[in-house]
Length: 159
Ligand SMILES: CC(C)(COP(=O)(O)OP(=O)(O)OC[C@H]1O[C@@H](n2cnc3c(N)ncnc32)[C@H](O)[C@@H]1OP(=O)(O)O)[C@@H](O)C(=O)NCCC(=O)NCCS
Image (cartoon, rainbow, N blue to C red; front, top):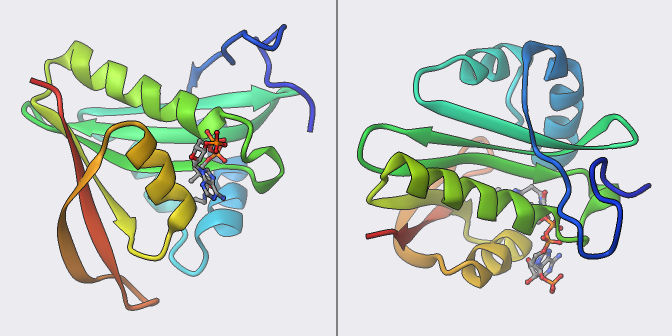
């Protein structure tokens, strides 16, 4: 895996770009790799990208999408809809770049806070979110289907 596009030195931040319908085939591929059996379908992703209040961004490496994330702002609170990093590009800081970008966007929008759901057994994601100041605020029983796994709700107050 080469360096993310837009990053030219060890301290450079990889460039974020908006996701478009042209990204759908690669998004479906990444969803299957990262979230099967509850991966979003092409149809669900297409709807999400153009739904009201959404902000979807991605990071490329060698002109190929390797990381993506989405936020939904309902006028009060921002919700992290998804965040995923290609397994071949994980543990290089891209997840952190995405979380920081979503939180910054939520601040700009004037959100009261940021909320998200995460599988209770998803240690990498829990560690990532904790590192960025999120705390567990609740538990949703059997939230993930068909896996039948609970979710933690995590929150980050912004004001
Ligand atoms: C969770 C995920 C997005 C993290 O992306 P990433 O680019 O690997 O994360 P980063 O490299 O920015 O890691 C930042 C911090 O998160 C934590 N972290 C990330 N992966 C971890 C792992 N496998 N084990 C433990 N901690 C981990 C660490 O604190 C890490 O900091 P460090 O590398 O300095 O120790 C990625 O593992 C992923 O796509 N997982 C599958 C999809 C998913 O579960 N998404 C979240 C849905 S709620």
